[in-house]
Amino acid sequence: MSDAPKSLNFIEHIVEEDLAKGFPKESLRFRFPPEPNGYLHIGHASSICLNFGLGERYGAPVNLRFDDTNPTKEEQEYVEAIKRDVEWLGYTWDEERYASDYFQQLYDWAVEFIKAGKAYVDSQSSEEMAIQKGTPTEAGVDSPFRNRSAEENLALFEGMKNGEFPEGSHVLRAKIDMSSSNMLMRDPIMYRILHKAHHRTNTDWCIYPMYDWTHGESDYIEQVTHSLCTLEFASHRELYDWFLDQVRDPDKLRPKQREFARRNLSHTVVSKRKLLQLVEKGVVNGWDDPRMPTISGLRRRGYTPESIRSFADTIGIAKRDNVVDVSLLEFHIREHLNKIAPRVMGVLNPVKLTITNYPEGETEWLVAENNPEDASAGERKLPFGRELFIEQEDFREEANRKFFRLKLGGEVRLKNAYIIKAESCIKDTDGNIIEIKCTYDPKSRSGSGSEESLRKVKGTLHWVAAEHAVSAEVRLYDRLFTHETPDSHKDKNFMEFINPDSLKVITAYVEPGLKDAQPEERYQFQRLGYFTVDPDSTEDHLVFNRTVTLRDTWAKLQQRK
Image (cartoon, rainbow, N blue to C red; front, side, top):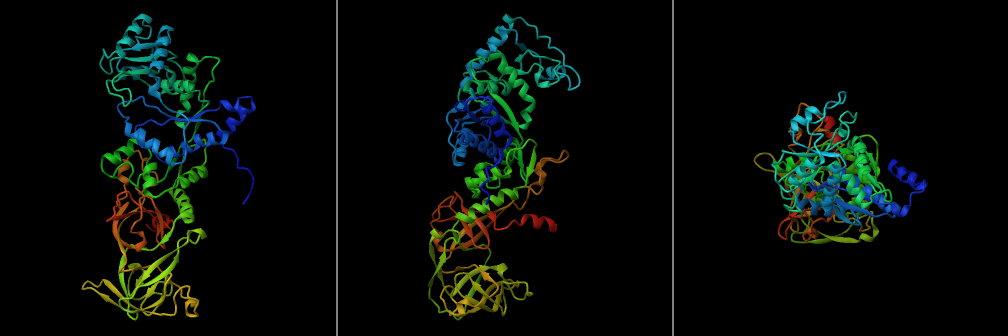
């Protein structure tokens, strides 16, 4: 592996250039500013890793700021979920801030705008204002209220604040330039009336600041040096800077907004509005459903913080939006779990196997490695007996030479145990195989050192002893959408691409050592995939979620269709 230093992304180059020009390193400050109107998803994880990663790289503080300016969509539940997610990913913020902390300061500044002739109260409807705003190629038209006197504007704005007017009757607009080529500069709205209780300020306010007015000023108050936003805010930068110009003290640091591209994940949606639809319509079982691209959903599915951070590091920071295949995310969790997950045996689709020449009533305890990738993981004991369960797919009455599992007259090794030979099978009245009769070679036990134990057979099967097996509910999760980009079709609703097979619930049997497995413990079910214990598990009812299969089978499956 190369020891060459990792190349810088373009955001880091911006920071390095500022430092080279004399910007004091000790003044650097970053922030992660989610709106608490939903749970964080994998796209937010990239932003979290970017901002907190910069903090770690430069030894700079990072604020967690909630941009809570819309009481109609924001809830304390989301605030708490966001904090849990950031902490779970392994990051610690310097200060916990809220845009609502600055409501009074923002209001006071707005009053100064009015006095300076830089803002006015508009009493038109939203439809009238939209028409007057013009088009990208046609200048807008001044509002008939644009030249109201400062006294009238101040009186109306105070009345808005005091709750004297209904919603939609007035807004406060910045007075900039109705002919600007950037339509966001055409007298943008700074405040609207909302008679809604806020999750922190309750009913103290009847007016709420708009995002563009709040965001840059919040950065300025907190003295954030580099305000990093996704690409759709590139056109907002001019307005961000204009607002800062009106309030900035020349002795204070000026925040710098820079934009990076979204990294959308294939076979899912990351719009909070669409994710909320999935929750509200019962397509999924909540924000933390393991099929959701939310951080809490990925956590419940069995993803690790390390795998998500590694994924974010791999996809990097770019200047153009693109779609990242979900298989790359799955690759990173496989890589990490392969190193840390204990190996166990579980049978998902069981059929009974009886070893006819094994002593009845006898239980033998065999030894197995917990993780061949980790010598310190130790060993465990497995019960073995006359009656076992194996996977139905691992037996055929007849098969060609390429089938290396169990077939009549053929031999396989039972992992960590013996070589067996299939002699016959029993079927029910519908022709389904319900029991396989086998014999075993008692001298072929794995690790015994005998000549027979070294005998090679092509197939090795996992199994569990029927007498000691523990029943478990296993939830087999797959991609939530059948299409790579379900929300990119203008003529179809993204809901039309829901995968009807995204969840299959089965009853499986697992080895007895898993009886006391705890939520979020992760395992490799040998030959099958990686699984984690779901929080729904109880002492009497074990529940596993499949995190990911051992190999990426989705692409091959799609090629066959």
